[in-house]
Length: 139
Picture 1 (cartoon, rainbow, N blue to C red):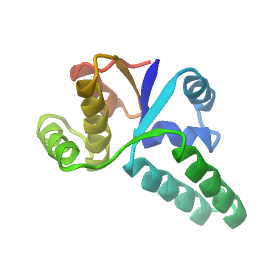
Picture 2 (tube, helix red, strand yellow):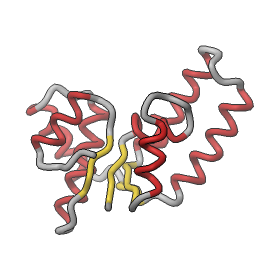
Picture 3 (cartoon, rainbow, N blue to C red):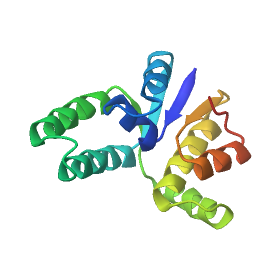
């Protein structure tokens, strides 16, 4: 199974949250995809947790190092003009944040490049609904 993971899903690989075990299982069972934005979004989540004292500085830095190693093992969609243009169109169709539209656009571009079904893994209701309406399968 090929799965596209947005940042809200991948952050659960590093920080214990509801659905962390599900994300771990999905990551171990197939090919994982994401977009370049994910790295900055996950780093932002770690920095916020460190500022809020739920992570120490050392824990934050360790998680960043692990995340950067993991990014090298994922298929990463770059933020091309085509992805950006599709994200803009999606923003006109759905009530999404810019980052979520970029994730959805990245997954849709991948789906359009192949005949293989791509499963979209995210934990935002509006984003998941838009992904479903755009023809992506959800877990």
